[in-house]
Length: 615
Ligand code: ADP
Image (tube, rainbow, N blue to C red; front, side, top):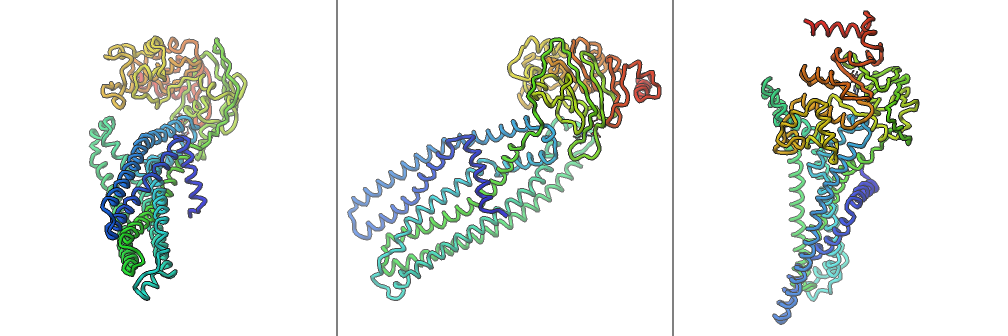
């Protein structure tokens, strides 16, 4: 259950985030609330003032002057409030953008092993769903403003209502008048207001609970919905959908999910309508009570007819204000819950130890890497992905890593580049545990082309240079080394061509093999002393594959190259080969020496592939 402290803590976290993102937002909002909150009461006062003036026979001139002053005042206040609101709209947009930026920045800088976890991915989905279904920062600010404007309005209304409780004794009306103007009468009136505040707050809480349950159901539902939408709308997936005639299957799953979402929607609608109806009946009953009670005081002469208009107006506004406070409070509380999930996400600590040692800058690229009795379990996985791996990697050489699927090759690379830290054992660079090095410096030693490399819908030049500033000459050279310069040269905008259509209407579509070559060019551009290629030729045609092999030495120059491949033939280009099986290194050596061991895994893998290739 939500305690008061919980409410204050949740909201102060959100507000301090808003203050950090845009310091002037909160003071500006407060000014607007105070200015705009008073306007309705000036109108109510104006109507009452006119009625009183007319009933008491005041000069028309006096009444008109008073009316003019108040109309001008309302206009001035509204104008000031409107100008502030204009500034606030821009700032709100800015805060929303900050939220997205912070999210993206955090996702890119958090420990990879945390980002990859299912719980983190679930949290990211909830935050995005929350933002798109009225739970984002704008909705929060809106409901908080509603709550506060309700509070400001209630304070004004309450202050204006006070004289009503101290009305002069009635001139007529006898017992009724005496009762209405007594302390008892006041208490009945106050009790109705308290009852009203209580019921509104209970209804608002119930409404917020319904909405929260609805949100939780929808997060799941929407995830499934978007999963299917991606299939139907993504042109790249469209091929598979057509070839396998998957439309009916997708449609069936989609309809089933839609039916479920519809029943949730209908259930929640019914619940919401019943709360709203109760609220409407209550509002009508209270309006009736105000007219009867305040009207009776007017009839008995305790207040004037002008006062009747005024107090009914103020009491009705007070009722609306109480309702606004209750709704605002419940909604603010609900949305603050979502925003806290976002703030929790930003606060996830990076647990990976970040050392301080700089890495040695060596012109001769004489780096020595060693795995010393390294074992590793993925989080939430009981089986080790690597167990007791010990190996020294020769610098300047070409190392091939081979083995069946799931034997631990990619995990070996992830540990080497410190996406994960070993569960046991240590990895050393020039004799020092890699955890002791400054992580950014250590990262700079590696260029990696992952199997699931990502190119962005940016110009090719930026994809290769991985940045906006770049050496265009070097970009061209790297594209040439990767064997893609002719294709890029043939494009209308050359290296400035944007790839894919998401980022530019004129974006060019490229094949998987071409994308892989651009990814290789990016790895070369980085000019890191150690180049890692994870299945770099998987998407290449045989001719391009041969070209990469033949020019491999030239491509990587003096650098240390680690080459993970299923094509056993690529191993011949490497002086040292590590053969992985079941999370461990079972053989090491050169192609010839490994092949000589006829009963070894390497020979068996080699012979199996050779059979297919030679027919
Ligand atoms: P390879 O690259 O040789 O195909 P991997 O290193 O990817 O093998 O996988 C080694 C083992 O670790 C496999 O059993 C695989 O299922 C498991 N594994 C890989 N990635 C993860 C992960 N993110 N979470 C849990 N287990 C994983």
